[in-house]
Amino acid sequence: MNVNELGFLWYLKSNSNMVNIFLKNLIDTAEDNDLRNTLNEIKTLSTFQEQEAIQLLSENGFKDAPFFSENDLYCSSAKLFSDQLIIEILKHITSNGLRVLAFQYSDLTDYKVKNFFREILYKITEIDNSLLKLLDNKGLLQNRSFSYKKAEEREGTFFKVVSTQQRPLNAVELASMFGSFQCNNVGVALCTAFSDVVKDEDTKRFLQDGTKLAIKQATTLSDIFRENGVPTTTGLEAHVYKVSESPFSDKLMANLIMFLNPIGIANLQTAVVSSYKKSHVKILKELIEQVENFSEKGFKLLVRKDWFNEPPITNRSNNN
Image (cartoon, rainbow, N blue to C red; front, side, top):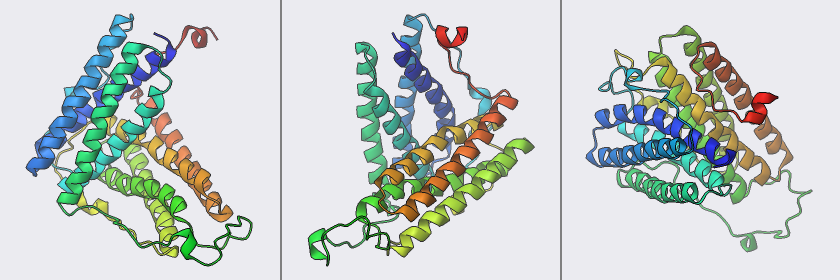
């Protein structure tokens, strides 16, 4: 097994370990039976991912203890999120899983590991479809379709990039920004929820900064959509419930936010390379830098609190 397999399996094992603890609270607090069934499917898959990754790593001489345990679940019955917000969070997590697994799959060379990743990709795609269907069936699906024109139906069909800096954005540009907009909606809700229950003051300030950042980014992107005649919806933080006891440890909440941060950067990067408008590229690059700065603060916090799950290193990096 080469360093690619080792790194990808360790990443999968570690994140599945964290998500499994998080899911126990969601399963115990979900009110809708259909949602609870989907949560149990996700828990089954996440447990399989963690255990199989541990087995594959062990077969190649790498043994590592879980970073999170039952001790990081303080109160399984504390309902911090509404059912709708639970689904939105799960869509966020599964979308990140699909993106990362698909990227990693292409670089795998060990047949056994590659087959394992292929199986997970298939299952997580099915779960992602189930979550979308669940939102639609419950009438909770936000940001439905809007009207558009085909290129041949509008005046001046010849697309001149230099002369189109003042034009409305096209469908590709808007679609590329949409993932980042949704990401920040979920980010506002999560950071708001966690900052209400976290005990450590440094972590509370970090989460409050995350709330402000997500609101700022969602507002910026929402303004761009409105300028181009596309309605958007926000307000997922209204689906955060007040609880008397924190469901999770501070360590788990801080790590979960850091786990989701790369989604925001990846979505914004996709939007940058899809845009032909200099003004929007400039805005998007500024948003990326803001997320990067926030991630740097989070990394320093995890290291300072001894909450950072340090990945294995290669012999070469160790010697140097």
